[in-house]
Image 1 (tube, helix red, strand yellow):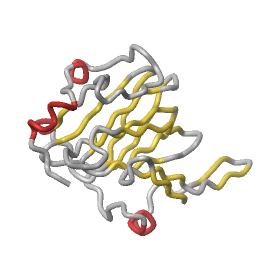
Image 2 (cartoon, one colour; image 1 turned 180 degrees about the horizontal axis):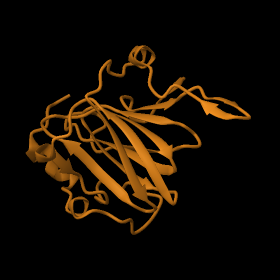
Image 3 (tube, one colour; image 1 turned 60 degrees about the vertical axis):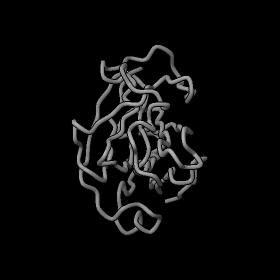
Image 4 (spheres, one colour; image 1 turned 30 degrees about the horizontal axis):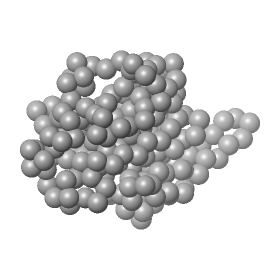
Length: 183
């Protein structure tokens, strides 16, 4: 596998080694020792699968106080995956990175604790898998506004379909009021 640092050093783009032949392909989706060597946690608390149709935008989600690190993969389809640094005293606070993850390129994105996460489905549908370092707690889930002008995320589609919860996200300027842990 190859690991690439992104514009936000803690967020990693992972390109697994894919073996292909006339029958199809094979790659290691998760290997505890290899991933731990590059800084990912040894243990994850929960695995999740999400299915969405084209132009659905999910996010930008985060939990507080039980922050989650996430390892994102796409099993079918393609998404534009985004991580936003929400750590108030980070040198990258309010910065975002976005990558195309698909079942064709097999890329994964490691998003550590202290980041909001969201994705936009670019194909007719997408099946997304993500490993989380802490359990999902609906009482602690918060949503950062997907189209906050201060973030200026360059989503590759206009007028996405969002849930009511995601439409009512908070702005990045409200993050300080949450008293998130300092890095």
